[in-house]
Amino acid sequence: MYDPEAMTVAHVKRRAAQARHNRRRVVTVIGSGRTADPHCAEVGRLIAALGCDLLTGGGRGVMEAVSRAFFETTPRQGLVVGVLPGEVNPLTALEGRQSGAVEYEVPEGYPNAWVELAIYTHLPDSGEDGTLRSSRNHLNILTADAVVALPGREGTTAEMWLAVQYGVPIIAFGEHHEDVPRGIRRAASLEDVRDFLFDQLGD
Image (cartoon, rainbow, N blue to C red):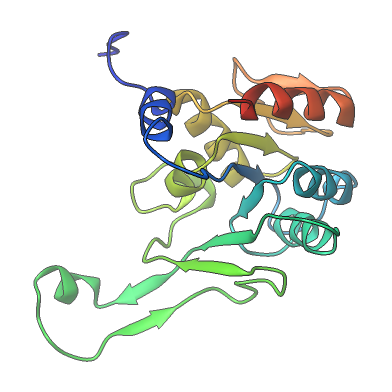
């Protein structure tokens, strides 16, 4: 049952920020892992110009195009961070602390060439399974100070839904063909995205 007095992600981050020095701001961009959106380059450049770190799922499509635009922006202070899906076999042996050979695989195309800091995970699920505990989508959203959602498919919808549930600020930009969950603001222009990020990233 929902408890309005429970600590939200925003509360936890605000409390932690008060005790940290030189805190980095992280903007997560989500979207299709298959095709790039026409707005990718301008969103990537905008985030770089704001001095933030860019976090994506580290793959192709929107993730790659935004990362490239961010990477190629000069000057910039932030890093391109990719949280990668991965599969460990046999994971149950590690859980049971059993010694032996372990195989680790990431999908083809991960990380893309523009990722500067790759975070390798043991979390394989995405798409329709993007809200499961075995999906890296939770990391992508929980790490973000703000999220920009570009058009995608089931995995993007799952991340948008998680952002709403966790209370992480999110804006949708572009021609979203999938349903955008209730409570998510839609940007009509890059200026709307810029205003949103200024509001969310301020101290």
